[in-house]
Length: 496
Image 1 (spheres, rainbow, N blue to C red):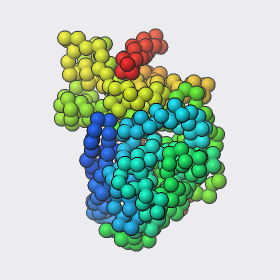
Image 2 (image 1 turned 90 degrees about the vertical axis):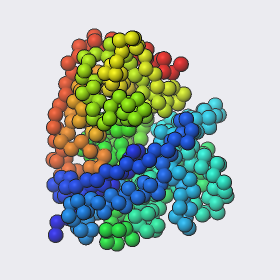
Image 3 (image 1 turned 120 degrees about the horizontal axis):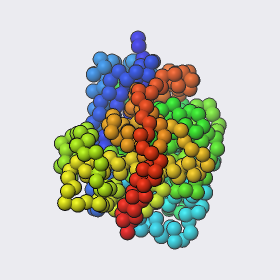
Image 4 (image 1 turned 45 degrees about the vertical axis):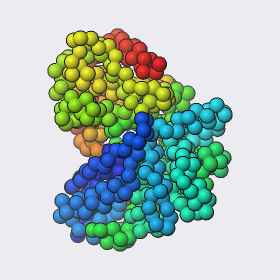
């Protein structure tokens, strides 16, 4: 009987469930969106129960689509939107509030106060992260302080909390297992990334009781087994787990030190494998845990820079501006003109991430004239998505003291050839698009496969990765320099 890996990718806008065979071929996939909730300007929430339903129905639908029985699932892997947090009642299993999404800026004031108190230095030293509403710890504190009775219940040991991976694992295991992996834990601002465990000083800074938090485990290995899941027999091992960006790095087979990827999702994220060495950024980037494999004592680290809004900018064109009916139509619209005619879109709809870390910045559309049309704005949107990645790459090269030769790309938006050519032009390095562009869910599957023995080694996985198309720059160095100078002037406007 043929066996498969079932991989769950719980993302910001939806959940993808897929089945992979021994050759790492995706035999079936189901994607279902879930609602975005915006209670106030700058606030972003999700309904955890709605997310759970996309997982449950996704599992049933993908098995039906592939004509595969639950008994053929060898193991399960999970990847997730990282810093988004859920808090739930230990007894009833019900969330006490909506999930607070990584994009949410409601804790900006608290984070500013932390900086004034001088806490940023110790937080950076222990976590590799800057003080920003982006990360989980301030969100957990907000829940404890703003949901009636939450802090009292937490102190009594009646609540549990974690990132989405921990919530899904708890549900998938019949409410028996409360665990997370090192990559997700590294994004909470509560784990010491040198020691790989929750830190008492950080817990005190954010006023988070340790009883809330899941056990930290390696990214591959036994996390738990299924219980009571429709379509699946009890006892299927869950053997892989990682935050979405680390999973994408793994799915891109970036196992060697210096290899890098850029994921084009709701946001865009550049990660580079730095091996067992933690590179402390002086250029506004983050040091994070990439993964820890089964049986390994050492952690693998990465240097990371992320932009909060990437593909979401195209959704804005589609939903708010109604320039297009489907996201994939943006390429044809942008190709109606050959330049933006001096128009720049800085997609700082929820502030700016790396390397600026400015939560107060707001999106700016600058350089318009009476001749500006929908096509110019569409092209400026694509350019803005790629130019913000250039800022991250330049910071990465500065930290490393060397030029990068190539970047592997993934995510749904990389199907857009114009977008990829822009990225190569403005980066000035080769952009490699693989055969399988959904690297996030592949990473979850690979980790689960390694953790369960479905695949034997990294070298076996590495053989599967292939370049589908390589984009190289057609832009001269002088034109690139001018473009970046104009872009930075637009960024300055978004920050005033």
